[in-house]
Image (cartoon, rainbow, N blue to C red; front, top):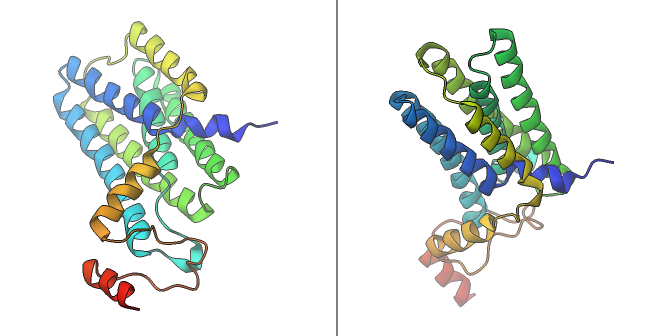
Length: 220
């Protein structure tokens, strides 16, 4: 029996962000400064897209009703962005077919994390597919660049062990309350007191405006 709640934690921001930072730090430690910058920018852009789409729905109800899309799945994006790169770099000195297998395994594992978000009723299929595609774009873009620019072995045995231990702790990590933080931040900027209700989303129109819309709501 698959415990989807355990699998979904591999995409939690606590684990994936730590792994993303570790990748950048170890690239810098080997003087691979351009690759460290490339990875940081790609991952940051992926995160920015996720946050922007989530905020657009939470604050203003902007989404795609026909496919039940209210924002990219962050878990799916982070897992498919980080895991392929992590496995690829771990196998950097291995034969090319083995490195390719590591990257593909990371993508498949990331997709399974995405499926877990559907299983635990956290996201719709469209949101998970979009998140996986965005994360895959991040990881594949970096791996393509690294294939031509990487000069040194980033993961020595100690770093491999530390990375493996970090991933093994994922099922025991308490999920970070990122949705609560994002909701609070969005409501602050939108001027509304409550997030846009997803249950009634199909019947409601998106919100437009902030203070003026809130004022109209009060006078009704």
